[in-house]
Image 1 (spheres, rainbow, N blue to C red):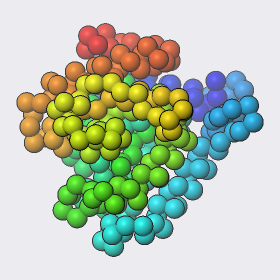
Image 2 (cartoon, one colour; image 1 turned 180 degrees about the vertical axis):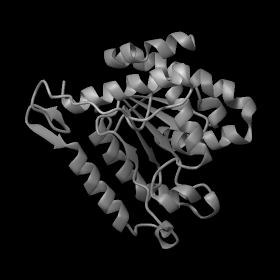
Image 3 (spheres, helix red, strand yellow; image 1 turned 90 degrees about the horizontal axis):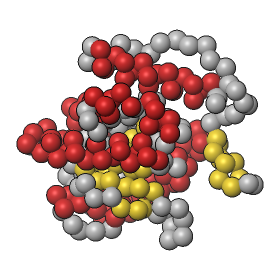
Length: 260
């Protein structure tokens, strides 16, 4: 295990302990871990190809910053490439930046983002430790309207490259637009949510487990839907625990507390 992996595990356990004991995260502790093996933030795709994940993510971020492939670039304040760890267990994909995100250049930082962070923390996920958060479009649609088809088409190559590099074990599609876009369907989010699908970058590539749920902004408008979203999160946690032994062990206390 690398020093960074040890730090991420310790950070996650500290966060879980803080939430269980006080309900608040008390901040990151300082640890002096060393690596068991020499390793960097890279992923071996096959025997001959090693990808510099952080370098590739920075390259994509630079390309997004310079992108003028659709009209959304004309009124943006910031591009919002995404945020999280370079070796995520899970990836959360939303629709696009809102006003707060456009101002800050970071995804999910407004009221909906604060709710999303709480939702993820309840099942042991965090953009600081084991998750990466991105959007279908990287610039804010005016008035927070739905992205137009040509706008999604312009941004999807960036998102697909991010998924290819990050290689998450599962994707949580937060809302109608990302669920419909990734699954190439017109079904409503009410029908899509809570249903697992196998998503592939290419026809013959390995499948990534994908679960749609409601967007946090929708839950802020209609709190009666929160129990359904919580059901989706529990389903997501159970699948992750079955796929990843480290998550299974690290999230055991949370899953026991919430009967997941």
